[in-house]
Length: 376
Ligand code: NAD
Image 1: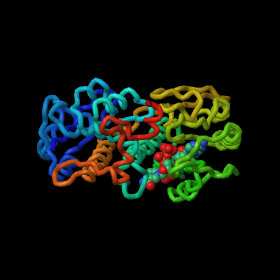
Image 2: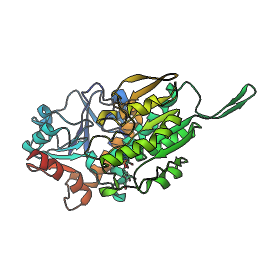
Image 3: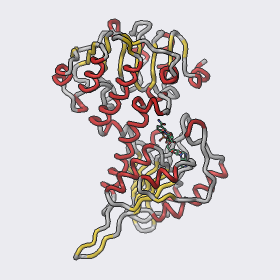
Image 4: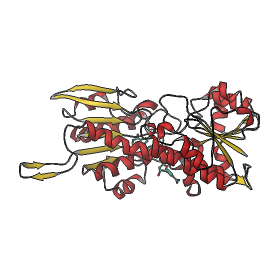
């Protein structure tokens, strides 16, 4: 069977859905791989490296001749319309926001798998692209903060005096938040963190952070995710977080609720209570923002009593580290393909909960029920 890998068209997307290593993995399962020329260039993977790994490099992919397409960003309705019925696609599908593309996949009778939908269960960890890309994002948030802070992260005791460590507060301690904690710790900062989930206190401590206890009951939603807080509870959370935010040199926010806008954790008033020179990094800026006034892809200055602080709204974060983000994503994709491949043929077994759970559209229907409920 022929697996094709697209060159991403969005200039903000520097990742690629296959690397020379994942091409070898696919070839080991009896699959032929074609790569669009230049697909891996921005991530540091040359056409020659793909050729050496056994792929065929082509100037453009003919959608009519392929059996499976691997991609990073959601496909456009125009491209989907050129695929043959029964083609399998695997990549990010943004089921909640790219509804026109989902409808196009359904109408073209494409069997589409959305990497966002990989079930968060132990058996699927090697395919879990949300986790692999959140790892990249969390790491990057800590570095972006460190680069903007006009002081050190670590403690320095020198002949010229002692410099205390920076105080970093991480709000939202899921996969990205835990990586932000670990990275800030490695840089020597004093790190504390808060999350609403029951398990998060132990997870924060395991990364070397101090858990901030706001004296509020922990809240878990379905599948180990958080759920939206009631308005009075959200206000209480903000009130109790305010002194922690005011005391921090760096605040990194990573809180999210699946299928909902990001919860607002830091208000403009809380920002105004911070010390001049402090830095706030909002990883959730693209999905509504944990921080009032954060703008995706922009650095906003906010006036405070003794100067100003910087609020950085993060955007396209995994794409800023395209090489390793692609390595992880490509392996997630090839692991999913391998799961569905028998004797060199990709045959999705819908009795398998990973395959069923990841499927977005199949045989002219939207398989993912929450998306179907919105679309139909
Ligand atoms: P996410 O990106 O959906 O959310 C990030 C964090 O924001 C979560 O920890 C969430 O609790 C937190 N949050 C939401 N509202 C908040 C609020 N008002 N205040 C503070 N924090 C708030 O989550 P994620 O990183 O994808 O992980 C979610 C869960 O899935 C975690 O329990 C994680 O351990 C689990 N997980 C399991 C697997 C697996 O079993 N294979 C893999 C990855 C993650």
